[in-house]
Length: 297
Image (tube, rainbow, N blue to C red; front, top):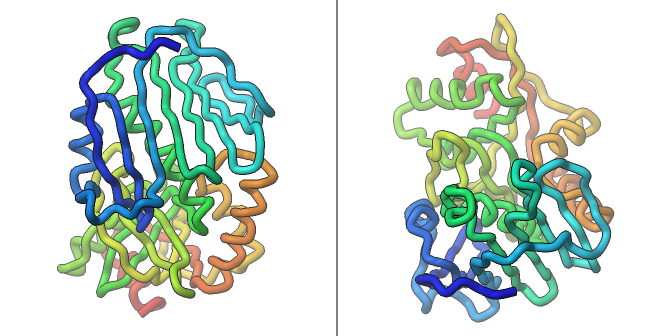
């Protein structure tokens, strides 16, 4: 593969207490979105995950190894324990436009992008930013955590995550908290990270926050994960482990493999044992967050 000579940038990331040393093609969008998470060299440990991002005009081949998913545009492959490849397929041009290789044992990843800006007039910067999110979520799983599709807030020093299907009103609900409780703020409006640290579950902001992009680089103890359902009246109940498992797995974005499922099942089991998980039937009135606060606090 022939790499395209282009301006490069090196930076260190700290996201959810995970460290990355990135050597990448120059990307103003990614550097802007990561600005609050970039750290100095002396704050980045030597065992940080190493990430290389390169650009090519060569055609990319389908990955070798076992194919784990069967989707039209984005598929996972594995060729060994802790070794994964994510392939991005451009169906309109019938070609693979990017590959992300990750080796957990070596602690390194390599992202190869076709020069889609030259070939198709598509901005590569947003593309690379999205691929970095997939890499982060995979690394997170190997470090006893997961990212969950939820809108999350910090209230009185603790984190609350509200998860539901798209369009149910997660952001609307968290907006009611901000309206009714001064000092409350958004931690991440779409994909917060959760990790077990020293026997306690914490929730983190990340630089990937969906369409709104609202996020805060902060870490706080997790108070509760609340699944939202639309209802005419506001009522909350505890969610049993049996009910929580399928709900939580549906909210976690991950590749499908025996290795990943086993890791996630152990992590999720710990999470559900130690965390209060609830179901909130709610409308969009100011009463909704008050019902949650009274129940949890």
